[in-house]
Length: 148
Image (cartoon, rainbow, N blue to C red; front, side):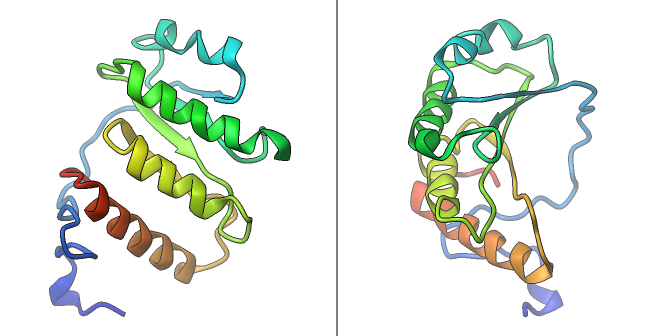
């Protein structure tokens, strides 16, 4: 457990400092898309500016055999689309799945410059959040990201 005096300190050496105030950005319209589907992924640039949030769903909407393709699709979209004021979120597989670590690594290391939020599904308790928070901080440090 962290001491309260360390609340606003980075969770890992080299990780960005946590935000002190959460910026208010209205999220009126979220559009989930399967990044493994090339046809749908090709339409993402046309949705920028029309929706507040684009959510790359790596979890339940993706068949097991296409998990790698979905991850690659997220990275492709993050690296090749200018999102402007539209946020890019990703919903990774749950912590107890065999794909979660690879999903989070791809979202932070390869797409972290563009991904605004990582949705962690099926959380079973506070320890899941603490674990994911530390893991993401270490990956942000490894990737040299400057924003949390």
